[in-house]
Length: 232
Image 1 (cartoon, helix red, strand yellow):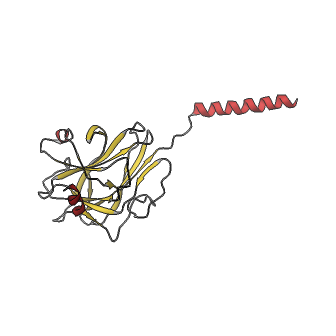
Image 2 (spheres, one colour; image 1 turned 90 degrees about the vertical axis):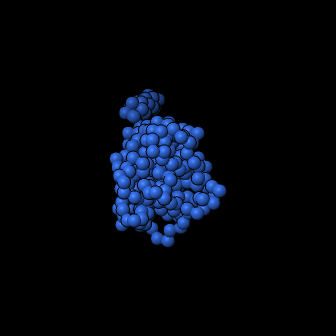
Image 3 (cartoon, helix red, strand yellow; image 1 turned 45 degrees about the vertical axis):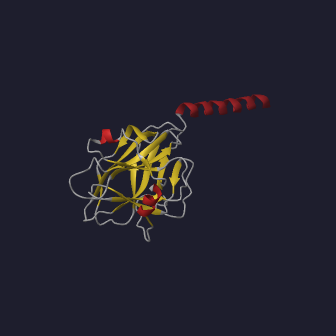
């Protein structure tokens, strides 16, 4: 049953309009080669939909992942406005702890964002995550929350996805709203769709500390001094 529902919501996109960092690859079926400080899941199709609409039960979408470093820099995802009748698609992006298909502590929450009704094709959207701290090896999720931005106007958004099950360390989840608030919703178990959202999560490159640089400098001076002594 779940597989049939997932199959029904998958559709391929003939043309894509890309904005954001060049060569991020989130909207490209040809995989981009990530660096050692990036987690990357390429996209090969779209999935629909979440939002504020009587025809939609799912108002939250989450993609889980395993952190590969402590400090995330930015997240790139692919979204499209799929509202009918035409209206802006409104949402917030969250970064949370995630385990046993449930949300833990919210580590980052964006301000309200919107995609104009004119942007019905997929575009890349970039979120700066500087200042957020993760534990390498732990599981987290980035979440599209359309419950917090409800204003009584019908809207819907679609998300670019990887439908080939290529990311083994996470999955795309959906969650319904109970009407009792986000905190209550997040206490419930999410539904694993079996596919992944396409995304690129970059981490800050750790620069050598001044203390370690000083230690290296002192070691170099010691080696030079010893070599000088040997030649005398």
